[in-house]
Amino acid sequence: MTVPAKKPRTGKSAVPKCKPCKGTGEVSRTVRVGRKHRPVGEQTGMCLSCFGTGHAPTE
Image (cartoon, rainbow, N blue to C red; front, side, top):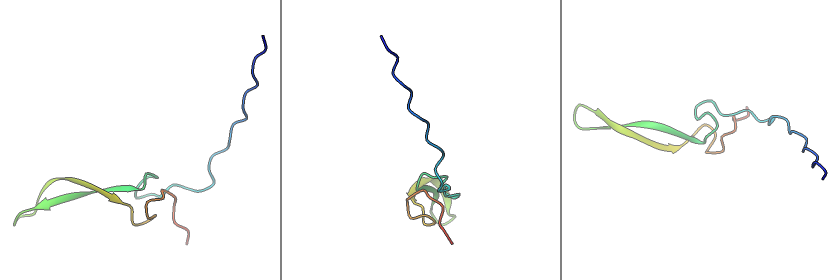
């Protein structure tokens, strides 16, 4: 019986992760309601810095 050869490891991706969404493509915002704007929960949405890709924008 032979042992299968191990696959070579791939390096880390060269594209850095987006800082506001930490590479997920989504960010959370607090939802506020009422006259006093009290917080009632959180809502997730697309990250406007990377437009949902999770990669850091290039300048």
